[in-house]
Amino acid sequence: MRHFITFDDVSVAELKRILELAQTIKADYQAGKQQKYFVGKSLALIFEKQSLRTRVSFEAGMTHLGGASMFLGDDVGFGKRESTADFSRVLSSMVDAIAFRAKKHESVVELAKYSSCPVINALTDKAHPCQILADLLTIQERLGALQNLKLAWVGDANNVAASLVRGCVKLGIEVVLGTPKKHQFDAETVRQMTAFDPNYQLTQTTDPFEAVKGAHAVFTDVWVSMGQEAEEAERKRDFADYQVNAKLLAAADKNCIFLHCLPARRGLEVTDEVMDSPQSAIVQEAENRLHAQKGLLVWLLNEAEKVKS
Ligand code: CP
Ligand code: NVA
Image (cartoon, rainbow, N blue to C red; front, side, top):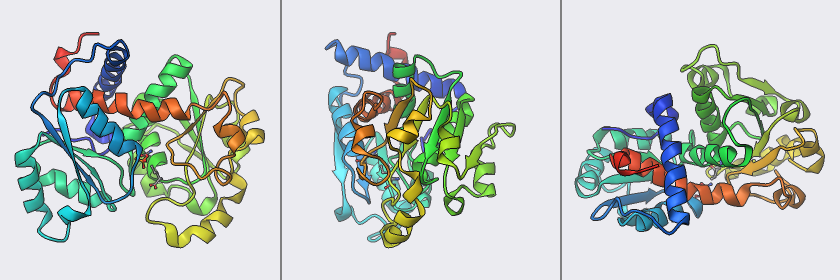
């Protein structure tokens, strides 16, 4: 059974194929020619945390492709009413795929272990690979290719940053992180994230200007992720010098684009000026969640051969 929990679950060729499927399916959708690959199929969405983009893109995506989706919030009692094994065996006996946004990464791994259908990571404390599929698609569209690029991540070395690194290790794309020392990835995490290519050089600097120098895309994310609310005051102090503002963006390549997975805390990690600038690709990036996840679902549910590019 194939799952998509981190980029370790796909080969380089498979990752490229998913992005290619996303491009084709997006073009078909925009041309009003969306094929209904999923008639009679269902996707279950289990969410332990809030969401706008992830939930809506999966639900709308299934509708466009002729299938159905069901949103399962707190009332299904994941982790409370029965064992994860029983929950997973029962749910997967009734649906064709499951997308799970979990408080703990281990919950998604455990659910997948007992599932008889594909499980997709819809964000955990450790990873957000669906976001990075959309980001790679956006970079390809805005910058023309996924080669010869330097990507800069400014701010917290968090779940989204970890998936960015893992995806870029797979594709051989350079990533530099500008992060305060205490929030950088530790050596063991770097080892795990780069295990696919032990020669991959991940640079972590405490200087945000050094991180963005010559970068073709600058990323940031909130300083306080869901589940870290108790650390808010401390984190705001720690990251105060890591705001992506016009001055910082001016230190990147002149054609650099700005990406943020959203939701953003405008005025903290990023200014309005950057969010609303012509360099900002944030709305396209968010919309691409829809197209990237359609590509992923078509691939995971073995419909890829039907997609004609
Ligand atoms: N970027 C993202 O995953 O957004 P949501 O939390 O709104 O799903
Ligand atoms: N790092 C953020 C991303 C939200 C999409 C969080 O985990 O809350």
